Image 1: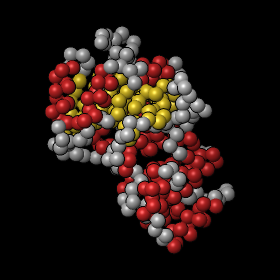
Image 2: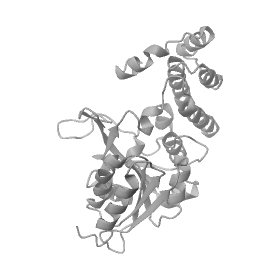
Image 3: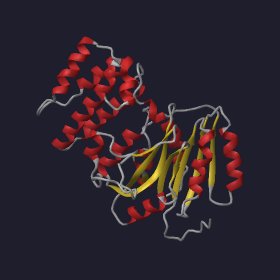
Image 4: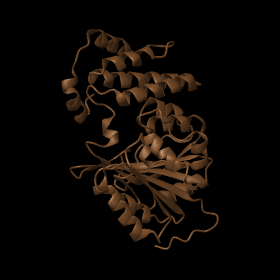
Amino acid sequence: MDRQKTPNEPLVSVICTCYNQAPYLQAALDSVLQQVYPAIELHIVDNGSTDFSRKAILAWQQKNAHKLPIRCHFRDRPINYCQSFNRALAQTRGDLVVDLAADDFLHPRHLAEAVNRLSVTNASVYFSNVRHLYTNGQTRAFYPVDAAGKAIGPIPEGDVFAAVVEKYQISSASLVLNAPVLKAAGGYDERLVYEDFDLLIRMARDHAFVYGDLLGVTKRILPDSFSSQQYRVGDARFLSTTLQVCDKIAALLRTAEEAQALKFRILHETKHALASGNFTIAARFLERYPKGGSTDWRYYSYRAWLACRWDLSGLYDWWRKRKTL
């Protein structure tokens, strides 16, 4: 593919982070190479993999180094994901930046659509629809789509702060971000176990989001992937990060609508903490339920559940698989 860029085209820096994801790595990297948008630099980060990822990265780089600028970052041992990303981010030159997981891959028009939508709006963050790909080969769109692949129903745009506080309404896998804005915000918060909720909150507080109606990213849903670990029986690491982000949100609230959204979020996270047997973190969530206004009946029911310590965690995975929780 001819990757000649014009002087006015913004450079997109793609940071692809890999940790023991060698079987999926080539699809991710090839999807960057197959973008119809020409102005791209690629940073490949191996975060201390113990499989053959490093060998695969070097082979791919050698084969494709003449096609686009590629820089590899190899770590001898794994470090915190947010810290790893920030180290690579500091070395990017792009006007826009993408965080690409090594087990995901991009639609060929993902970056072109992002650059176009950002160029005609005052937004700093672009997002799209995402195709979830399951291990059995089945797929599901993040936003339900019609026969033509177009999203059904309203999608939040512009000021999306209340929307992303309330629930997971934007898939972070699809984000294309204004690089100076992200760098000025300090990149990812290195105190956190996972980054996407916090990133959405901090970007949405003061920056507009714009949507592109494209299944721009295919996200593999794997049992051992980072995104599959958020709610786990007896493991509160990810819930602890969510709690820290909720504390940040409380300091950022400006409207009654946003306060109501935080109430909804806290009850949602409390429910999962209780159902997964993480009672200590559940108590901490309930302590942060905003005072004032009406109190949802679920707040009282969750307090009763906590007081009795009903351990139903043996059913938790069953509930989640059937989406009945």
